[in-house]
Length: 245
Image (cartoon, rainbow, N blue to C red):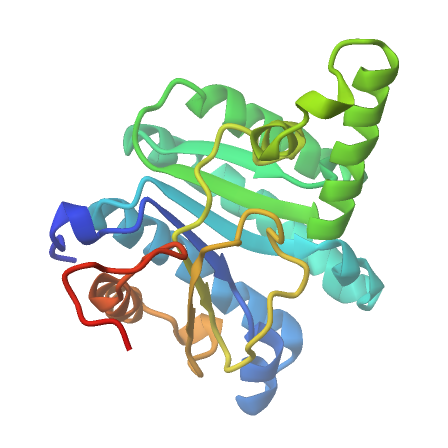
């Protein structure tokens, strides 16, 4: 993928990888087949994002609500995650990718937790693309946990209530230290946040595509990045070099 002007490349791209199951059913296959095909897209898109100059790529891999899915599908998803981590650990490290996970990962199966810790430790000093996997993640639950931690800090006298600012809240979230997403991509035609990075997306640009995740290619990513580059982000301000309507 050719690079856009670096000034126009979003620093942080977040993706809701939607449509695996529906795509598989449309192919006359079981939903698990869609997740297997979607795993290949993760590999392709991670490489393409890094080549494009994106600094942080956050993938919504498994939400807290996804625990309600059939056990067979949930088990297959975590089996795929472990397989991905095993297969990609060397390649991620070689490409200077740093892996990080957010969410309530203590709820994941033990082998998933072990492999996440292993890959995170192996890649922690890498200075290339940061790949963030949102696992057992919920934007609302993350905010609740942050409020609980801040309340405990206030009770212990570590911070005063009047000193709590937006930056304070951000520092108590699981995304602490990461820039807010510049661009959200959601595949499969759905147009909602689904409880993803609710605090962090206050000024994020949204890009929705009807393409299902198993068919989302590096070229589709490039198209999303081109549209982002054409947008005028004002963050509530007014461009003074243009007439005001």
